[in-house]
Length: 142
Length: 85
Image 1: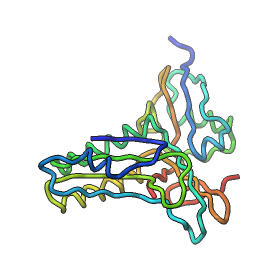
Image 2: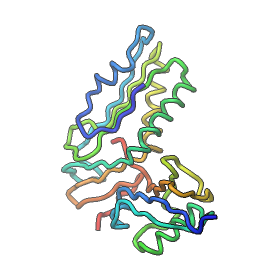
Image 3: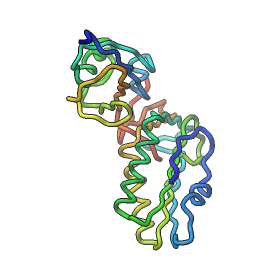
Image 4: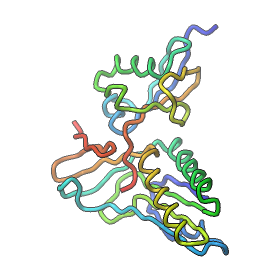
């Protein structure tokens, strides 16, 4: 189990290594990537900000809930903060299980929960200006 | 009996910009709830959103608005999150 908030680049292979073991027949790794458009606007870059002292325990809690639902799962999660360029990895969730069905399901559940409850925020720099993203809403920066 | 409890407030993301500060130490009356703390801060920083638009966190965990604060607590108000991609 490994949970990180980091300002440096995230290597998905390192998270996979953290969940690899001899009984894990399936590893599902989700990587979230900064894309070049949002809300129909071209995006130049993003800034992510985290309440790190809460975000890491919150990720650990999601990992524990995954273990409650899929007892054989091993979980690693990392989220990057600071300035990110298009194409860079912002978040990785890697889950190992004996078989692929649980690995896919647990990984999907993990990234969905992370997006709901881990205190991290995205500031989007786009053609129409800079916005804080709050849930599904984009709020212009004054 | 203490006449006031001293707590530490942390603001993040859009709330940090609206409040104009990252952290703030304030004193509130004993027994004050998170809702009362937010109301006091809202009075001081008028640009903060209404309480319904944020969640409260007490000592790094989401907490109910009716929870009372104690001396030394760390309180944060969490706008809708947008981690991931």
